[in-house]
Length: 576
Image (cartoon, rainbow, N blue to C red):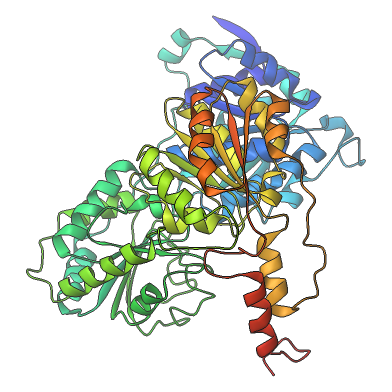
């Protein structure tokens, strides 16, 4: 027996087949047929958002936490271009994601019809794959391909354009009995793990045995809680110092005796020196791109002076920037399992160096000695948060100097507890927090934000209220785009331009949405404000007023300005 379904119904059936459980969207007339089909698909939760960039970032956060493609639907041109920020994050962060975009009717294409875009041209260099589905019969094939492409090799975003009339077109669909009789059917996608061979693993052990100053750096995606357990076991057996790449700190527990810190923005100088002086760098899962490599200075290009063992799931990445002495084509999960089974080389000569690295990290990550200008001491705030928040709290942030307080002073202890864009995209934290709370409502979710950062997607606080998601936002307000101001003072001292902000009362802003709002200007008031926020049972925002001089945990604006005056630059931008 056969029935007829619209393209929208077939598409939603394919999402169910491939295990999609959440869809993030801003509705548009171009994909109303999909929304109508979702009405009859209670197994898929739909989150309606306030701006397409926020919806895409929520989907990206879902992909980052689960390893499964985050699903986002947006409408034609304005919706698609708004969502492009989330696509860029998924690209640079190697996150599986599928963005479905409405398209004009097929008969109107190439006339610059209302809200028409050539999506292959617009997203061609941004996404991992871009396609447009013209034929309703090809929906099962191309949606299946999208799931496989998004999750294979180096994961990334896929963009699929959906002509409006294709979604309303009817197609005859066979029932389950006909499928059982031998008709073709689509199978759910599978993530293919690429395992390392016995020879490269044996060579890795030999190289470790010969090393004096090895170090392991973890990064990238395609990890899992089990993979983190396996890589931790490997590090323990070999007593290796372990470093996490930029905004990948959830890959190794900060409480572990082998953990030495992270290579992000403004890393511990002692750790930076330790990586530079290593004689063997084991890079697992990451690309060691511009930020963790400190502007491509830690490892020489193309041939590092350190012995480099690079483990990566995509062969096209191996050798693209760094020529490894031992390239290993393997997914992080498969490599971690194989590494955990390696026989230890015995008492490692570098054990004392691992202990020293650990001691350096503990000193660097202690917030208690930190003092900044102003009445609100963020070192004490971070110390209090470490005492009262659960160890498995999901920490979310966008981009800005404020994030240094999280990356340096919050101890990430579990996989699936960090949502932060390695792409450096502002406005990410709040949508990511909403996406995380929709996925795991029982978990504690905290969003760290700056004043400029927060208002890029502050409207998604309405989404948190709509779905009754009690996330906590800690908003640091210094009245400026702080990171840009920092660079401005370094390069053009005392010539302030376009970096100052006039902000609202953010506590009142939160209350206007129906959330709980607190305003804090001194250290003594923070603990009680936090307690009230957590006890409210609502989405809550704590508006923290920071002295503008406190531009980072260690620098003041005046100090940067004076340093720049002492080191003048010529018009070329180089020191005089």
